[in-house]
Image (cartoon, rainbow over all chains, first blue to last red):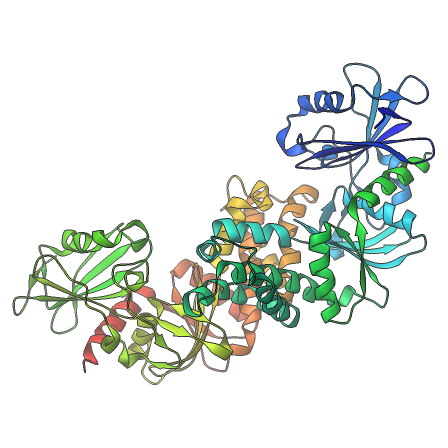
Length: 307
Length: 307
């Protein structure tokens, strides 16, 4: 792979830093990544982490190299805070809201895109990184209007109309799975092989209850423990049940968002496949959108709306 | 206080061991406690912990001293497993289901009461300790029929008819508060003074949403974080909001259990007062029942139904 690029697209999340070189035709020339996520860095360490990853990149034109960054690097605890755009928000305004952190030495010219916030009637809410994937979706599928589901640690549900975010919600589904698995009484039922043959059946049982009764989540969670004590449920079944219950509850609670259009699912393909199955159970069509493709398309689109 | 007793009532929970001497008129002659809860003991250490706490007690009659125990000492990981009674269950059968662990030396004669389980259509569920408080309630208020709410780490909702448990549910409300406060992203908004003046307003805001939309819990939780990032919510407000949201969700999800009769609330008075306020918001009457009084009355009643 070459080390040449017209500019570099960067997704700087809490856990990882990922970068793609892009040529003047919009094609990816290289892909690199580092474990130096925002969560592991102090403010002073960001510029060094970027130099380390991209120091040898040769700009295809000119002397400086534009590095367009989305994600948690722009958070208050990140490199340099990029104030949120407030929803309803047109994502064509992302670049205009970018901030420009200083680099001690010259050649890299980083800009960090803002996240999007929501205040008032829809409830306070924030996203950082997802807005760029959403702009990417709008670029990949012009004219799309409907709800977008972005499964993950903090799943997002977004009403998108072209490049405009109308409103959004967050469900702490992935994080809930992790804290309950690791720190709650349910951990006793979730030790051992979690990906065994019983996982699928557990998932089906959990997702069915979550979809039908999202209001019963706190009562149904304890079934994980009781099921292993009374019915000999194994750890793989329990893990599947917990995962299914949480995903079913998330979808069941947001059922009123889902319209007639196909729901784009942006996230890891493994997780999105589970969501697609759960959505199908309630008659909703969905399709998987590759998260990396969406973020690169989003950074490319953001760059094109230069003021 | 005397060290004489006709028998000793013991509540052996996960965190603590509590004991009360009882005379032949049913009055409490002494109260003692130790931090040697079931969670801190290996199987071999239970008899020693009991001797340590009660070794000097003089039996009012005879040579041996009956020690009647309820709670987690009878769990599989406890002293000696006391198999569950299965609901629907008449609590007058508790003593008959008791197990008798051995003591290395003579004078103390312990018996551990069973917990109650539920299988099948109501969902797998278990309780240990609460069943004895419920028998106590039945003794303190003969003929009571209706739903009982037992707020706590794992709150119980129980359909009780006299001494009979018809069905029950568990909500992991207290534990959810703790794991989210300690281990989730919400912890960033919950550091500092949590019991400040903003806590009450946060509780009111949370309980209102939880009662109205228990199905939205996973979406509303993230408001804790977003509220502190966007609206300058302080840690006391955030803690109140989280507590109110969880309690409101628990009650909102179990609304269909609540009939016309006053709901007995058994638990810590601080927590029960919060629940009473939340219940009042939806027009449900409730009253606080002292948890210690209930457990002593329950052990006394269990002892009276000797076969």
